[in-house]
Image 1 (cartoon, rainbow, N blue to C red):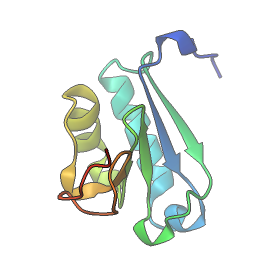
Image 2 (cartoon, helix red, strand yellow; image 1 turned 180 degrees about the vertical axis):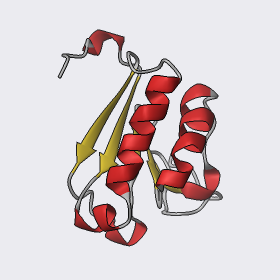
Image 3 (cartoon, rainbow, N blue to C red; image 1 turned 90 degrees about the horizontal axis):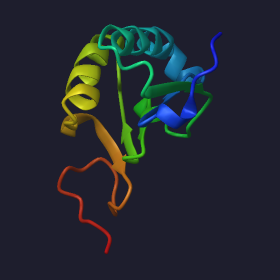
Image 4 (cartoon, rainbow, N blue to C red; image 1 turned 90 degrees about the vertical axis):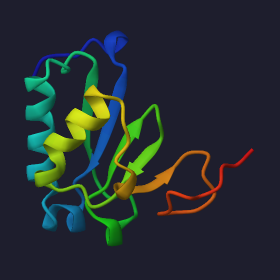
Length: 116
């Protein structure tokens, strides 16, 4: 495996591959996201890490996008291309898949209030 130059990294994705997430397709999802990142030529600026349990099994699979601090829920292999194109290429957010975002005071709501 090649050593990645961390000085070039702009985003870091943590993709849960704990037991429940694995049973819900996270391994295939991880592979697809990595494939689409490479297809878009983003592999030098986006780093992915497979994690174990992130503690949100009922929302499996979980993907955490940093530095934005967005926790996405129910990310499937079928959503992988849309996630890469919309979130990583265009900088948009998949509102219907947000579980939590840093600075928000409640879970799973696009109308959550910001913490000041």
